[in-house]
Picture 1 (cartoon, rainbow, N blue to C red):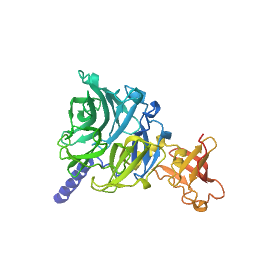
Picture 2 (picture 1 turned 60 degrees about the horizontal axis):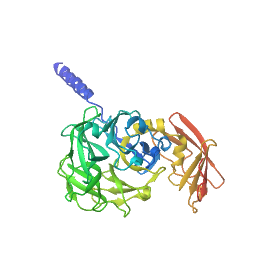
Picture 3 (picture 1 turned 90 degrees about the horizontal axis):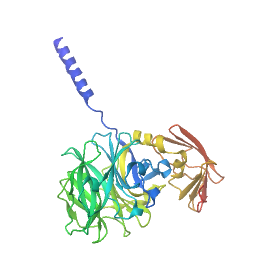
Picture 4 (picture 1 turned 45 degrees about the vertical axis):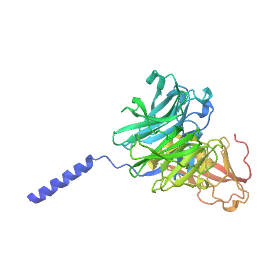
Length: 409
């Protein structure tokens, strides 16, 4: 009897111990792309897009901002958003450049810190460096902040480029305070170029006990290079080779790990061509272009991709995804245009497309249902599709047309 009671007590203790542990975070099942779209005032704002696989992206909120720039910034515009999941698994941190480019490339002297627990509602604080760090009249700009968790300090490190006087841009860093509303102490230089060359658009990846700092060089050859260290806050040694897989100018390197894979994606903004390039790597040293596998129904500028859970993707879709947007992101179409008032969608397809059995490739996002599925006969005219997103449900007549699209309405 005593033995049975002892075993029972052990079982209860084990149960209570397990019950006291925080639940394991859900496995990533989707991706969130945070980006801005251009140099016009209305384009300098944070936008979101979703992907089920890291390759096919659908803009949320009709490619409109998910938070107003005027409400969160000092300048009225934000660029270069970076988003991070916190160490607790349920808090999200976002940082962005506080800037309106029409005021000049040396006009911005601050950044924006944002925080959320649901990806929908964001608190924010604009940090204006002349106010936060007075006595620096030769500071010209603060660019492209990003955030990473430092497990040694148990703090979030914010890193960004600063440009003083006639000196080149250099990457600095400072820890955020616990509330993520301010920076602690004076910024310190994170990366020291062996040639004193410019370094901007830093992006750090932690892998196998090392930190890989991707950044853009300027003035001594332009492109993306990598420096490696076994410490987060310094000691980076340059790998003196460019890793971009194009001869076009690039900026804004962003890396993310693919779900259910050991591989990473390195993407960057091919800003003179109005497009992004995606490359895949196993070792953060050798990169293969995968552009042919990537689709987007928007044109992003410098941004970042964050793996998220299916539940988080469903919550975002329910808030910001319109049924028409699902059809406009058809993977196998050359382009698409919707007339929401008429309830029609026109897909532009290649001339050789077999319309009798054509599958537009509509999205497979969490919380989204599209019917019918698979190949349909478009040779006889429009096919009716019903799209359900959260509590929204709508039917569209979808036509597939070889050649260019009609003007959108």
